[in-house]
Length: 154
Image (cartoon, rainbow, N blue to C red):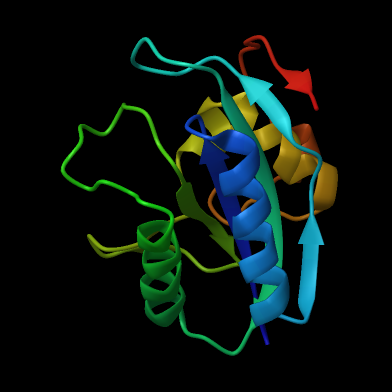
């Protein structure tokens, strides 16, 4: 069983999309932990605020199978892949960590750089896995410092 830590965000029909995403995850994976939900301003563009959270799922999928499954889940929620990287999202799911793996093959990048750059990624990750060691930095997640932006715990 592999532990996948997923960063989940939405700023379009946030409540509906996050709730639906969690229902899909809970019905598809029996081993799951869910962080609190945070609200943060849109990053890199002007838009409605995001709701962000982190979910850990245990799965027998390999990383590429999980990425494909998550992209299909995003697509079910109306994800428009033709939009710029920083734009409104019905549902955005990123692989943040996969156990202690380090992968950067053009399709998957773990650990995700955003863990150390965005507190809307790190804060919910620390909520569910504070003592996990960041595979590249070799320090506990709870010991990573980041610049603060306005976050509201939902």
